[in-house]
Image 1: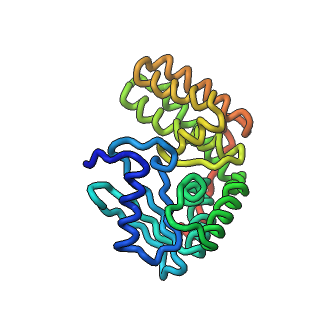
Image 2: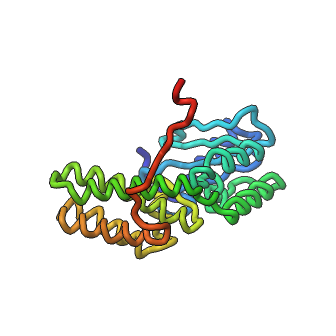
Image 3: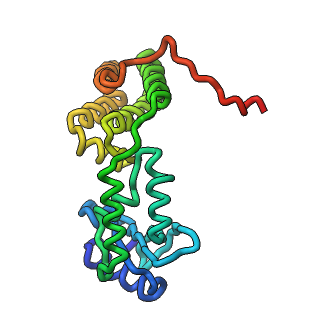
Length: 249
């Protein structure tokens, strides 16, 4: 792995990649850790390429000058579709955030201006509100998982359940407030930015389960109560989940 880790060096790699392989791109946005200053010596380059037209959107992973590059190819229409129809229903907006947080390394023409305005509108609108059935399923899943955790006497099982509870609680806390969510490290970053107290409580609870199971169980009970309270509290009795009629087939 190359030791190159400065933004200027990464930008130079991306520029050479564009000139050689994607000269028709009308915008090229470096996103991810190099755009936000969180890069490490082994960070990938996230590069969103915008074209006037693509037959279909695409994503590919390549290696350029010793550095792994994650490429995302779109035009405005496919970008809009992926943001609104693929990502937003799950409460995430990674492509829009890449545009808003990233840095365009090509001259900012009309296409980039349109793309940035679209990403800003998507971000401002926020994710779709949680439907009642979805909210009930989430409350039930968290309640039953919490019971499994509190009842557990096996450290390995308890840690597995805690790792299930962490994203469920973090995602619910964000979505119930109308905030965008995320996955993996992006979930933590979103939660930390929105509610540092709950982010800290969840982080502490997960660490405690690994180090001191009884203390971790109590910590998860406390943070789960705080997250569930605004959306109706725990849910067990009375929960029903009918199967779709077509499942009979």
